[in-house]
Amino acid sequence: MQKFCFTFFVLTVCLFACKTSKISSVSVNDHHTVLDSIFNTSAELKDFISRKDSLRIQIIYTQIDRDENNRPHFTLHNFNENRQLYFYPASTVKMPTAFLALERLNKLNIAGLDKYSTMKMDSSYLYPAIQTSVADCVKRIFLVSDNDAFNHLYEFLGQQYINEQLHGKSYTDAQIRHRLQIFLTPEQNRQTGEVNFYDSTNKLLYHQPSQYSKIKFSKRKDFLGNAHINYNDSFVNEPFDFSPKNRIYLQDLTNILRSVIFPESVSADQRFDLTQDDYKFLYRYMSEYPSESKEFNYDTSTYYDAYAKLLLYGSEKIKPDSSIRIFNKEGDAYGFLTDIAYIVDFDKKIEFILSATIFCDTDGVINDDKVEYDTIGYPFMKALGQAVYQYELQRKREHVPDLSKFKIDYTTF
Image (tube, rainbow, N blue to C red; front, side, top):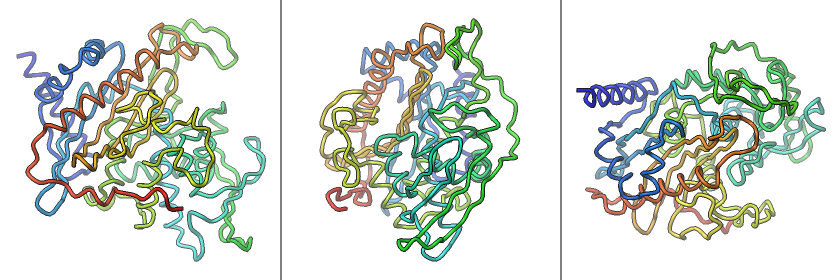
């Protein structure tokens, strides 16, 4: 009876998440049948799963089956996915922010203004005067998870716009409250400076004045750990308060990824307002390797090809399989490791979406730089991705998917 009640609860939560997100063509299966069999294929993975509570593991595995018209249909298998189980999203918040920045340019609908237009930000307490473009910021976000690139887009969009747009797309619990890798007060994160866009002749296309966010965030009580290190490096013998930090749920991140990879599978009001060129642009840079970049000269000893492709590769500095591409966004901070990925094998004709998060700080002291990414986080991500991939290899499909939409020539500029 207890097992039946738990299963019913999981199914109810999953169905509610699908309904509130207005995702269509989705079914939810009992995760005990599929995911448990996947977990049992790997002793290492099974060991991690046995510690799901202390490691705060959450997993969403989305099977994709095409019909005779190549339309995708989705079956969700959720493990321990729980909106009450907070995880710090870290760099995964860059993904919806990048999509919103491209959408914002399209909504402005100004002649000559596009993602390649020069974007200049006024000097402020944050940065010296910056010159970049939305396109460059999005590229750097997906190629190497550049924090400055995210902060520039945050400056362009503003806190209130980011949250209101996500809430309008039914991600009502999302709270993108602050910039990354720079300590600012909540008040400072409500403020953004002037942003101007110019064409190639330095003609002003659009002026955006400084903004102040008036959005009211719902109260939270997200406390973790037994103690923490404060920003002045002092030891505080109390749990760390994540309540003022960014929050976005794993199911919402998964649906956001799906809405760009498969925009036809979600309702119109949940799609991002993107052009066909935007979609092609995103597919390229979400899956391109740093060594393939024509615009940026990355040090491949640091930014190796499998960098940030956690599911399947973990932290291995290897050359990825040439037939596989991963369209993803990962994040790591405060001991949390998260990856949201659409994985394709063009030769084997398989595709699936896999999202996972794990907490790798077992000493109970948050922000002490003693995190076990190398011994817990990366091995877990690799083991999970490999186990699901192997399961997908033997899974029967009625129709072979046409994946040509995602096959990209990375040699062109």
